[in-house]
Every structure is written in structure tokens, then in C-alpha cells.
Amino acid sequence: MGSTRQTAGLPAIDVTSICDAALKLTKEFGIDGWPIRQLAKEINAYPGVINYHVGRREDVVHLVIEHVNAEIDLPEPRENWKRWFKLLLEGMRSTLRKYPGVARRLAAVGPGLGESDRIINCGIQVLRDAGFGDWSTLVYSVLLCQTCAFVATEDDRDKMDDVRKEVGGSYASALSASDPGIAALAKTVKLLTEEESLRRSFFDHQFSVLLDALLGGLEEIFLKG
Image 1 (cartoon, helix red, strand yellow):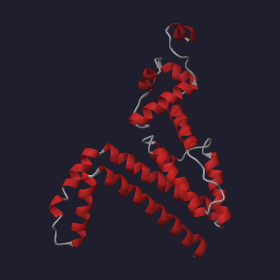
Image 2 (image 1 turned 45 degrees about the vertical axis):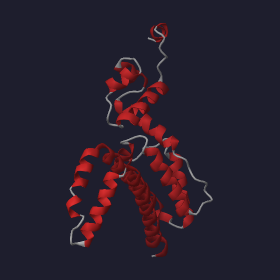
Image 3 (image 1 turned 90 degrees about the vertical axis):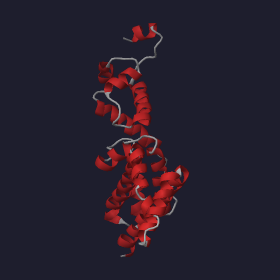
Image 4 (image 1 turned 180 degrees about the horizontal axis):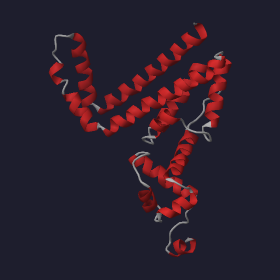
């Protein structure tokens, strides 16, 4: 196989080249949006070659998730625990948004062990140092899971753009509603439907508020309660 590919002017296939191709497809179609045959076509090989070098599709997905976890930067440990997690989770959101569908998997089943080890170990240690003690694992899980769930919703929203606009348009008749709550919501939805840049900044702000609420609430429950 190697000599045949070399003769044809094709690069050799290994775990790295398979992972790189899977990352490319994930960015374009999402982690669940490409079958093994499409991945094989991407590297100009038979599906069996992928099975030989990596294994099942789920094994390839694990490689992708490992790479995504490796891209996530850890803040300096000297930061205040709330500031540390806010920096970590903002960076995590930015990284996960490049790979649609990965956040949903992480929220549902976790990352597994590997590249995530450094994040887990450092994150839980930051919480222990802050005084969470035996609750550190729970607090860590809440923060990471809610971040991944938020990003998963963003990924889903991107796939439902036409539906989102249709539903948003249904609020037009409520702009002049006598109920002030409905009218205010209708105005916001109208702006988010029509202005892409405003929609991005709105959800950036929403994520920031979510983190502040989570961090402040966890502090109140476990450190001050």
C-alpha cells in the first residue's frame, strides 16, 4: 500500500493524517456528520486502511476529541479561582465552537482520559485550594458540563438557521402587544433574527452572565452557605 501511494504521488497514511482529515471534516460537517467512507475518500484510501491504523469510527472520534482537548489552554494557576475558571471556560467555548458536535458529546459522556487529564487535575486542584474540599469534583463537573451544554445549544442553533428565523418572525405581531413582557421579548427576538453581529454579541454576553451566575452561585452554596 505504501509503495503504491508513493508511486501515485500520495502521502503515506498514518494515525496523524487520519486524525487531521477527521478534524477537517468535523469543522465542516460536525463530529457526527461524516461517515467512515467520507473520511476514507478524504485521505484517498479504502475504509479498511482507517480500521487498520486507528480502528472503528468511535476510535477516530476519540482522536478528534483528544486533539480538541489539547487545543484548550490552561490559565495561570495563580489566578483567583473564579477568574481562573472564567478564563478556562471562555477559552474552551472558543475551541469547541470550531468543532461542531464535540461539546454535545462532552456534555453527555465526558471527554474520557488522555489530553483532558491536565484540565481535570488542574481544575480540581484550583477548587480544592479555594476551599471546596470534597465538593471540588461536583463543582468542577457542574462548570464543565454547563459550558459544554451551552456550546452544544449554539451548535444546534447554527444547524437550525431557517427554523430560527421563521420562529423569530412569528414574534413580529407581538411587537405592539399590550403585555410589556411579551413586547420586550418580541423586540429582542426581532433584533437577534435580523442582525447577525448583534446575535453574536448577545450570546457572548449571555455566556458571560451564565458563568458569573454559576461561579457566584457555587461560591454562595459551598463556601459561604
